Length: 294
Image (cartoon, rainbow, N blue to C red):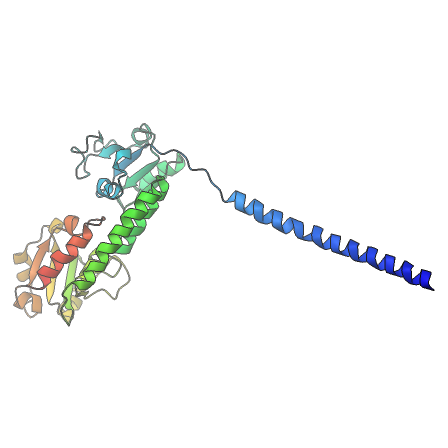
């Protein structure tokens, strides 16, 4: 009987050891999988040496984090092109062959202007980006995205951190208790206004104003003249690029009862300066604030 008990005990011990061994073996692949996943995430970044700039704010946004040294060529119409000392791509030469000759790692494009070129760059496997920020946050995100593509992510993050510190200072800006209502015109043939998804609308909000069409979630939209009159804005802003003068607006038929017209608060602004897609846009908030306080 004692012998039987010993035998049973040995069998039980053997089975228990086998069971424990099976469990240990079953757990091993999970650890291995985790290690494999960790290794897969390690991606070696390629060397970056060339950027072609065809966007208005392209040079300045690269300067934000010291990446302008990577510029190899600049479009003729880009502000600061000649002063940059880089190769100039003249109007009409924006063919993909001309771009490719600079072996670009990234091409910065003006939004809505280079659709065919963008398609050709895609076909050639060349990375490109349109500079089309619709808010201050968009500008910061754009800096981070470009920094990541150009392997300057640490510099880009430092630039954005500085940007954020400057942005915090805007909270100290004196703002009217009741926001100044503003109609910001994009065009008058037909009447087109800037909406919530526009950089100018974001800047106006930071300056203590309220875009009368800021409830429409788009960049620009056609609006009825009657609606503009009904909105009765306190201030009217006209982009200089439209060629419309203050006198033109003041003389519009049916607009005489609008507050902005009665109080002579119609202003022509240079949106290419006010709506810079760099940290300089924060200076525009102060400019707008002073304008609205008049």
